[in-house]
Length: 161
Image 1: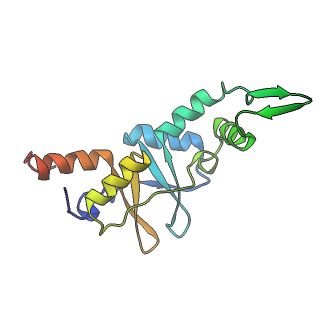
Image 2 (image 1 turned 90 degrees about the vertical axis):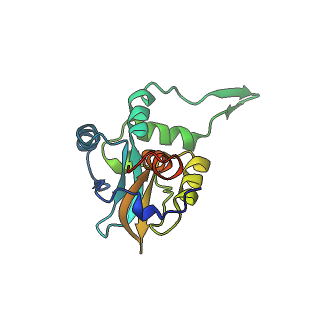
Image 3 (image 1 turned 90 degrees about the horizontal axis):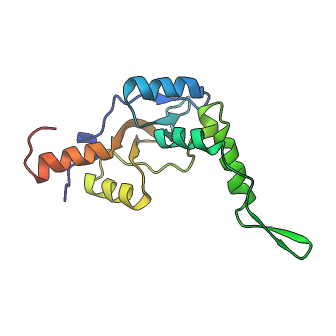
């Protein structure tokens, strides 16, 4: 169990984007900086979302999405998939700005919490990164890669990460 604080392992230089950033600019940033995702911050540096390479993949294939499945029942049509879910799929498929594509329900970490606790949350919630927030402002990003590097360094004696 790694009890080191997230602050020691996070990357405080990971760039962020604004909600009105275009998808073109986001793709350029992710590609040129070799990032798997970034935090979306407002003008006060508060995290308002996260957008990942997974979201970009989702956008690429989601335009192939079909109309929600329905089942006829008497004179009614019963939707098998919720219309709200389908509408969100379409919104993401045709996103123009980061705000159209980002995940709004952001799971974050504190810089002073133990890496072990942050890693548990990443595993439980199935996320590959956690924006690190202190006093309501973005201060860095913790990724699965940081967790693996910490395991190498602190649990398996692999030296400095």
